[in-house]
Image 1: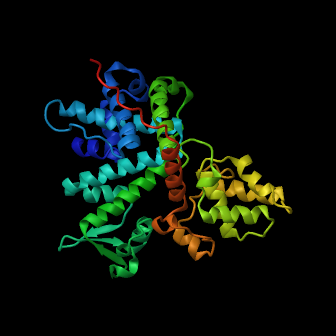
Image 2 (image 1 turned 90 degrees about the horizontal axis):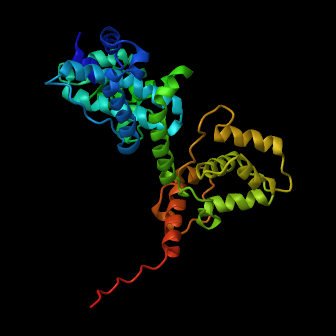
Image 3 (image 1 turned 30 degrees about the vertical axis):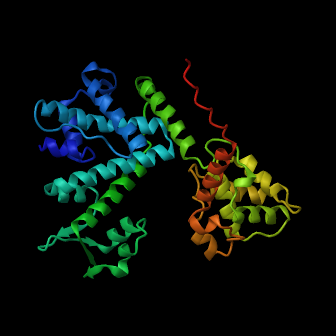
Length: 355
C-alpha cells in the first residue's frame, strides 16, 4: 500500500483501506487521546478552508512518517463530519474548493498519481507521447462549464475522435473541478447523534468564525438594507413593482435574488411586492421561495451580473459608478463603504506631551 499517496489524497479508496487497517474505528477517532492529532488536523483543514481558502501543509515524509500519514488520512473524515454537522452551504463550498485545490497542487509534484486520481474521479482520459492529456469531450464539458474564459470554450480546443487534448496543467484544473463537485455532492454526511458531543467544541469554534466571515462578506456588513445604497437598476425595478407594473420574469428574478443576497428574509422581500395594487400573494410567494431556495432547501440563486442585466433589458438609469463595476452587489458594497466613511467620527487629535 502506498501510504504517502493515501495521505496526499485521502479521498481515494486506498486511504480508506489504510485507515481501516491501522486505526480503531470512528468512535475512537472522535474520543481517544491517541487520535488527538488527527482531530486537530481535521479542524485545521476546515479552518484553513474558511479563513485562507487552502488546506495547510502537513509533514508526510521523514521522522514518524507512518504516524503522520495515518493522522493525515484520519483528519479527512473528521473534517467532513465537522462540515456536515454545521451544514452551511458557504462552508461546504469553501471546504470542497480548498480540498480540490490541494489535490491540484499536489498533482503538480506527483505525476505518478495522476492516472489513479483521474480513475477514482471517473474522468476518462489518456496520456499522450507529447506530454498532453486527452480527456473525453463529455467529461471536458462536465467539468469546464464553470470556467468562463474563452480559452476553455470547446470550439477553441484540439478535439480528436471525441477526446479533447489538453496541457497537463489544464487537465489538473478539470480534475480539481471534479473533486470539488464530488465533495459538494457527498456532503452533508449523516452523523449519528451520539457522535455530536465529541465534535461540539470544534463546531462552536468553526461556527463563530463562519458567522464573522459571513458578516464580512455580506454587502450590508450585517446591517439593515439602506435604500440609498441600492443600484439604479434595482431602485427602478422596485418602483415599477410598487406602481403595479407587470414585471418581466428577468426583473423579478433580479430583484428577489438581489434582495436575498443582501440578507432580506421572505417577509421583507414579499413586502416589496405587497405594495403593488394588484398584488397576488400566492403567485409572489411561490416565485420568491423558488428563487431564494426555500422550496428546495438550498441557498438560492445568485443575482445576475451587470452584463446579464443589460442583455435582459433591465439595466436602468446607470450612473457614473455603474461604468466601473460588473455586478449590482458591488455597487451596494461601494456605496455602503462610502456611507460609513462619511459617517465615521472625526479622528481625535494627538495628545501633546506634557511638560
